Image (cartoon, rainbow, N blue to C red; front, side, top):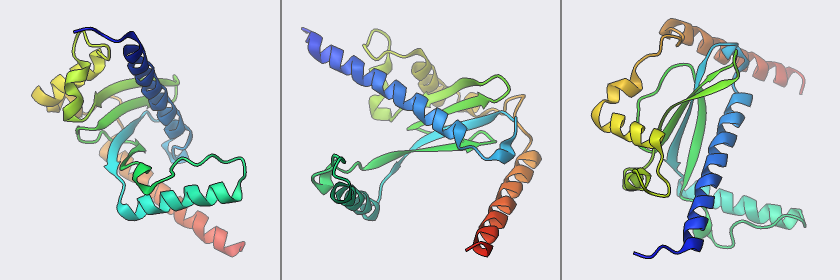
Length: 190
Protein backbone atom coordinates (compact mmCIF):
# COMPACT_ATOMS: atom_id res chain seq x y z
CA UNK A 1 0.00 0.00 0.00
CA UNK A 2 1.39 3.38 -1.00
CA UNK A 3 1.19 6.07 1.68
CA UNK A 4 0.27 9.60 0.65
CA UNK A 5 2.79 11.82 2.47
CA UNK A 6 0.43 14.81 2.58
CA UNK A 7 -2.41 12.70 3.99
CA UNK A 8 -0.09 11.22 6.65
CA UNK A 9 1.14 14.70 7.55
CA UNK A 10 -2.46 15.98 7.90
CA UNK A 11 -3.29 13.07 10.21
CA UNK A 12 -0.22 13.75 12.33
CA UNK A 13 -1.18 17.45 12.62
CA UNK A 14 -4.71 16.45 13.67
CA UNK A 15 -3.25 14.07 16.29
CA UNK A 16 -1.06 16.88 17.69
CA UNK A 17 -4.07 19.23 17.71
CA UNK A 18 -5.93 16.68 19.87
CA UNK A 19 -2.98 16.64 22.27
CA UNK A 20 -3.14 20.44 22.58
CA UNK A 21 -6.89 20.21 23.20
CA UNK A 22 -6.32 17.70 26.02
CA UNK A 23 -3.67 19.92 27.59
CA UNK A 24 -5.99 22.94 27.44
CA UNK A 25 -8.86 20.93 28.94
CA UNK A 26 -6.67 19.86 31.86
CA UNK A 27 -5.43 23.40 32.47
CA UNK A 28 -8.98 24.82 32.35
CA UNK A 29 -10.13 22.17 34.82
CA UNK A 30 -7.20 22.95 37.16
CA UNK A 31 -7.95 26.70 37.05
CA UNK A 32 -11.67 26.22 37.72
CA UNK A 33 -11.39 23.62 40.49
CA UNK A 34 -13.24 24.46 43.72
CA UNK A 35 -11.19 26.36 46.30
CA UNK A 36 -12.29 23.76 48.84
CA UNK A 37 -10.03 21.17 47.15
CA UNK A 38 -7.12 23.04 48.76
CA UNK A 39 -3.77 21.35 48.13
CA UNK A 40 -5.25 17.84 47.91
CA UNK A 41 -4.32 15.88 44.78
CA UNK A 42 -7.43 15.44 42.62
CA UNK A 43 -8.55 13.75 39.44
CA UNK A 44 -9.44 15.38 36.15
CA UNK A 45 -12.05 13.21 34.45
CA UNK A 46 -12.93 13.82 30.80
CA UNK A 47 -15.70 11.82 29.17
CA UNK A 48 -17.67 12.04 25.96
CA UNK A 49 -21.41 12.75 26.11
CA UNK A 50 -24.03 13.15 23.42
CA UNK A 51 -25.46 16.61 22.78
CA UNK A 52 -29.27 16.54 22.77
CA UNK A 53 -31.27 17.95 19.88
CA UNK A 54 -32.50 20.92 21.96
CA UNK A 55 -28.94 21.80 22.94
CA UNK A 56 -27.77 21.52 19.30
CA UNK A 57 -30.45 24.03 18.32
CA UNK A 58 -29.37 26.31 21.15
CA UNK A 59 -25.70 26.13 20.05
CA UNK A 60 -26.70 26.88 16.44
CA UNK A 61 -28.89 29.84 17.49
CA UNK A 62 -26.14 31.26 19.73
CA UNK A 63 -23.67 31.04 16.84
CA UNK A 64 -26.16 32.87 14.59
CA UNK A 65 -26.86 35.52 17.24
CA UNK A 66 -23.14 36.11 17.84
CA UNK A 67 -22.63 36.65 14.09
CA UNK A 68 -25.44 39.22 13.98
CA UNK A 69 -24.30 41.14 17.06
CA UNK A 70 -20.53 41.08 16.51
CA UNK A 71 -19.37 42.06 13.03
CA UNK A 72 -15.95 40.45 13.57
CA UNK A 73 -17.43 37.08 14.59
CA UNK A 74 -17.02 34.27 12.06
CA UNK A 75 -19.83 31.71 12.11
CA UNK A 76 -18.92 28.14 12.95
CA UNK A 77 -22.11 26.50 11.68
CA UNK A 78 -23.97 27.46 8.51
CA UNK A 79 -26.31 24.44 8.89
CA UNK A 80 -27.68 22.71 12.00
CA UNK A 81 -26.10 19.45 10.76
CA UNK A 82 -22.65 21.00 11.34
CA UNK A 83 -23.21 21.35 15.09
CA UNK A 84 -21.30 18.59 16.92
CA UNK A 85 -23.23 15.56 18.13
CA UNK A 86 -21.00 15.01 21.17
CA UNK A 87 -18.97 17.03 23.64
CA UNK A 88 -16.16 16.29 26.05
CA UNK A 89 -17.09 17.00 29.67
CA UNK A 90 -14.17 17.93 31.96
CA UNK A 91 -14.69 17.51 35.71
CA UNK A 92 -12.40 17.82 38.74
CA UNK A 93 -13.01 14.95 41.18
CA UNK A 94 -11.62 13.92 44.53
CA UNK A 95 -12.31 10.22 43.99
CA UNK A 96 -11.46 7.95 41.09
CA UNK A 97 -14.37 7.27 38.69
CA UNK A 98 -15.22 3.99 37.02
CA UNK A 99 -13.12 3.28 33.93
CA UNK A 100 -15.14 3.60 30.73
CA UNK A 101 -14.74 3.92 26.98
CA UNK A 102 -14.45 7.46 25.63
CA UNK A 103 -12.82 8.72 28.79
CA UNK A 104 -9.55 10.10 30.07
CA UNK A 105 -8.38 10.35 33.64
CA UNK A 106 -5.52 12.46 34.94
CA UNK A 107 -4.36 13.19 38.47
CA UNK A 108 -3.17 16.66 39.41
CA UNK A 109 -0.76 17.31 42.27
CA UNK A 110 -1.08 20.99 43.27
CA UNK A 111 1.99 20.89 45.53
CA UNK A 112 4.22 19.93 42.60
CA UNK A 113 2.11 21.38 39.74
CA UNK A 114 2.32 17.96 38.10
CA UNK A 115 -0.24 16.00 36.05
CA UNK A 116 -0.09 12.21 35.97
CA UNK A 117 -1.92 10.34 33.19
CA UNK A 118 -4.04 7.58 34.70
CA UNK A 119 -5.76 6.35 31.52
CA UNK A 120 -6.85 7.36 28.04
CA UNK A 121 -9.49 5.01 26.66
CA UNK A 122 -10.88 6.00 23.24
CA UNK A 123 -14.05 4.69 21.60
CA UNK A 124 -13.77 0.94 20.94
CA UNK A 125 -14.02 1.52 17.16
CA UNK A 126 -10.76 3.52 17.31
CA UNK A 127 -8.66 1.09 19.35
CA UNK A 128 -6.85 -0.28 16.29
CA UNK A 129 -5.45 3.17 15.44
CA UNK A 130 -3.19 3.22 18.49
CA UNK A 131 -1.37 -0.11 18.03
CA UNK A 132 2.35 -0.43 17.41
CA UNK A 133 3.71 0.76 14.05
CA UNK A 134 0.74 3.04 13.28
CA UNK A 135 1.25 6.77 12.80
CA UNK A 136 -0.94 7.40 15.85
CA UNK A 137 0.68 4.67 17.94
CA UNK A 138 0.51 5.59 21.61
CA UNK A 139 1.87 3.52 24.47
CA UNK A 140 -0.38 5.06 27.15
CA UNK A 141 -3.51 4.47 25.09
CA UNK A 142 -2.43 0.88 24.31
CA UNK A 143 -1.76 0.15 27.99
CA UNK A 144 -5.07 1.77 28.99
CA UNK A 145 -6.99 -0.34 26.46
CA UNK A 146 -5.18 -3.49 27.60
CA UNK A 147 -5.95 -2.80 31.27
CA UNK A 148 -9.57 -1.88 30.44
CA UNK A 149 -9.99 -5.22 28.64
CA UNK A 150 -8.03 -7.44 31.01
CA UNK A 151 -7.64 -5.74 34.40
CA UNK A 152 -10.22 -3.01 34.94
CA UNK A 153 -9.59 -3.22 38.69
CA UNK A 154 -6.05 -1.92 38.14
CA UNK A 155 -7.42 1.24 36.53
CA UNK A 156 -10.02 1.78 39.26
CA UNK A 157 -7.80 0.95 42.26
CA UNK A 158 -7.66 3.61 44.98
CA UNK A 159 -4.29 5.42 45.06
CA UNK A 160 -2.31 5.75 48.31
CA UNK A 161 -2.53 9.57 48.23
CA UNK A 162 -6.29 9.76 47.50
CA UNK A 163 -8.43 11.54 50.04
CA UNK A 164 -10.66 9.20 52.06
CA UNK A 165 -14.35 8.83 51.17
CA UNK A 166 -15.22 10.66 54.40
CA UNK A 167 -12.88 13.56 53.62
CA UNK A 168 -14.26 13.76 50.06
CA UNK A 169 -17.84 13.95 51.44
CA UNK A 170 -16.83 16.73 53.84
CA UNK A 171 -15.19 18.72 51.04
CA UNK A 172 -18.20 18.27 48.73
CA UNK A 173 -20.54 19.34 51.56
CA UNK A 174 -18.39 22.47 52.08
CA UNK A 175 -18.61 23.22 48.35
CA UNK A 176 -22.39 22.85 48.47
CA UNK A 177 -22.71 24.98 51.62
CA UNK A 178 -20.48 27.74 50.23
CA UNK A 179 -22.34 27.75 46.90
CA UNK A 180 -25.70 28.17 48.70
CA UNK A 181 -24.30 30.98 50.85
CA UNK A 182 -22.80 32.74 47.82
CA UNK A 183 -26.14 32.48 46.03
CA UNK A 184 -28.01 33.88 49.05
CA UNK A 185 -25.49 36.72 49.41
CA UNK A 186 -25.92 37.53 45.74
CA UNK A 187 -29.67 37.90 46.24
CA UNK A 188 -29.09 40.29 49.16
CA UNK A 189 -27.04 42.64 46.99
CA UNK A 190 -29.46 42.66 44.03
